[in-house]
Image 1 (spheres, one colour):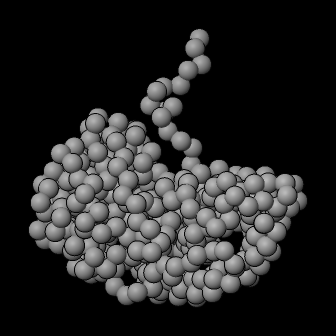
Image 2: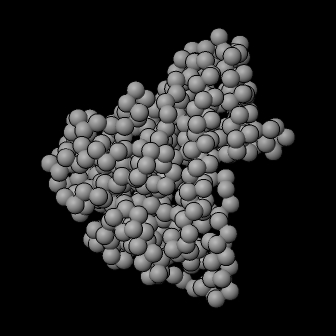
Image 3: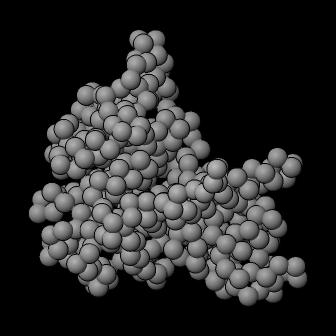
Length: 398
């Protein structure tokens, strides 16, 4: 018997964020106090009314297989959310519920990308985007956005990256890992480029929609002349502190939804029945809990930006959404503490973990090797302690 994995799997890289979280857990198991800022997960409990809805669903025996595209009442709740919050008209047959927004993104890519198709991915990017494109036998095409431009690509950069093979653009706003938020005017500039290239589908990852510090969320779906080529990705994980419930969705033209439904029907079927009933309560219930968490994240953002700017050698911008800070750390490359030499951002992140006992993620995994990511989805006390440790650790580098 040959212990040979498929070529498809061998093309993929393991998740750097999960790998760093695992390393952090191993040190904690050894009794080392580690401040974990590696994983993008709200530290708040799921709001009580949502948990109550899940308990009620269990008691009412919502425990059978769910429909592949999701329960009708959840799709109706999502359609209502899109209408009331975003001004977007989507019928329930244009919505498909999946096992988290991660599956929603992968469904969309697998449904529209053929072997050899190119998919434009602005860098920095979420670690899984290029891996999903490779899984679909597509070719990731990276467009680099520097810290000086707040990590946002320009229409000119987008136009320069488009070829006859371009099939899709993946755009995440608010962005993981940078926290950057595209304004409606900025999105319109990109839209005007895309209108000239009819083959391109936009996969708009909006999972951090409600963690926004600059006002109303802007969506690619708002432009009527492009809407038929936009796949909106969203879910309950970040806004409602429901990461473990695994509920995401796409809102898209019906032909794409049908394709994703066909795909999902073959490899996972419908999402968890109890989680769906909880998600109905999330979308239909009082939204004050969302605003309270957003305010807490904004306070933490202000705190971590202030403290990070006090660390000599770090270049820091002011993120407008999500719960990540993505400082530039390349000034430390080539430096040493006498035992280790910092060659890149992965080395830098490992140094912070082993010496400072702070878990972060190197920017190499996000397509930005001069930066590293810190999640501030943790307490004020943890943020203060983490930045104290980082400042102390980097002071040892010469």
